[in-house]
Length: 428
Image 1: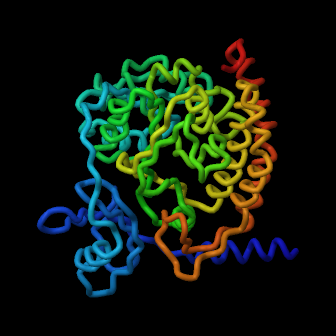
Image 2: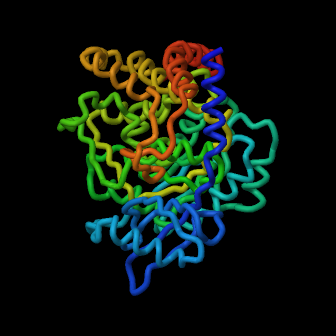
Image 3: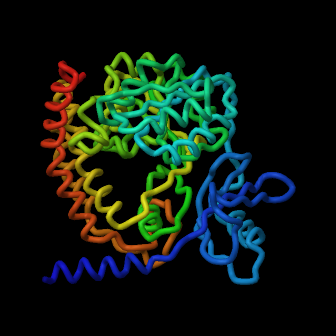
């Protein structure tokens, strides 16, 4: 009875969370340029989640209250000028390599069209886009691609369900030196692909790159709550992870792969990803494992001695899930995907077991911290920040994440068995 009452109170507080506007502001130039976020109306008074750019590059986010009757651009420019560093280091580099973009999708033609429009508007000098239609039940996706995008987008059908399976199918089809993966619910910044792939030209040891993911809209309590606790963002500091020189502040490296990035914004040197066998088909959305395919890919590449680079300059805007039920599904799936990917690593790379066991005590402490109830900070902060939170994280969601973590290994084994039955062969 007490738990039910507490959950009802958490839901009441959740429903009271108000919408937040999304906007971006470029401070360089004679006059700051303010634009609404993708698909958002012009900025007005009220709370604004603001992406700040310098030299066109993302450098920080702020949560700013614009008073009624005030000029939004003036208020936001003043706040951003005070809070965000004034310089961006821009390093020279060669032309980004020929790239392929893989978008896996299933019965979401409306969202897919929005994503494809942004991908075809990329400033990258040479790239291709491949849509993988995963276990479709209608012809809607194929008809969209053929009718609206013609030869600009290649359509591939993968009948076996699962995100990792779809990504692997895309991997076999691409022609690019670098293969980038994103989701059908994003809007890619025009320089996304250039910024994500350019590091490969500068570093021959680079095997993987990840980028920044920000919310396309914050209209519902679920979207605001998720972004208030970090969302998918990994900060605004470019970071290179080198297995030959592990970061001293990452004692669980490389097993805390969630710190490296997310599957909606990742790229691999094509030959490297193929050499490690791609993604484990028994991981990912659409399988009993629920997720973990991207984390598996990150660690496999690092375990082979390749570097991984995170760049905040490669930006996609993500359409977060919208309801409380969505958050419950997401919390459980995150927990399951985390332990499923760890199980996949140990099954496919048993040589990693000693390193994993050595980090297990700290890993358990990290898991407890990851799923604990997180209260709101007294000072508030921007959704997307990592040290401030505007709303408490509900206990219900923490419990679901822990349950998912317990289920994850079983889910992976079930998915592995289903994968063997579907393909007639074991996982990679």
